Length: 143
Ligand SMILES: [Zn+2]
Image 1 (spheres, rainbow, N blue to C red):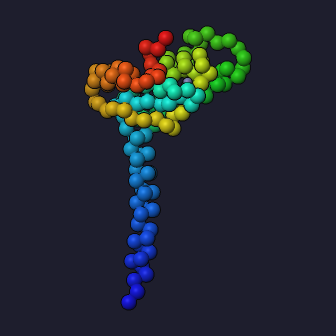
Image 2: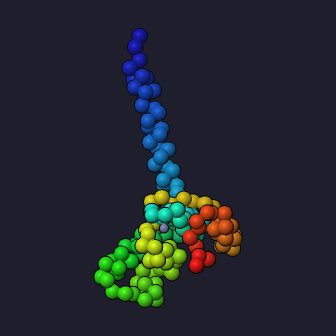
């Protein structure tokens, strides 16, 4: 006797499982909050280390829009002061400073969750720890 349906189900089981694992992982990362995270620079080995109490996807869209605003500003050729840049990109982070100084950009799609805590003091401590533990960390302490 033949069991065609059983065969089909078994055969496709692996690929279906892999598909859902990947989707679940990416959802989990972007839906986390109260975390320390790192974002790699696309042009050097620099890793931006940050923390957020917001959902990671919200924070990443802010980083992304800051970089887009910066690009738009730089394209005009006008020499913006650092306070103008801060005001217009809504950002005071070391990331934007690195973007301006080195003309590099960060890939927010490659963000990694480093740690998680609901206590903001602990997030600060962990951030300091990750900055020290990460080679080429880009942080407020840079420069
Ligand atoms: Zn860089």
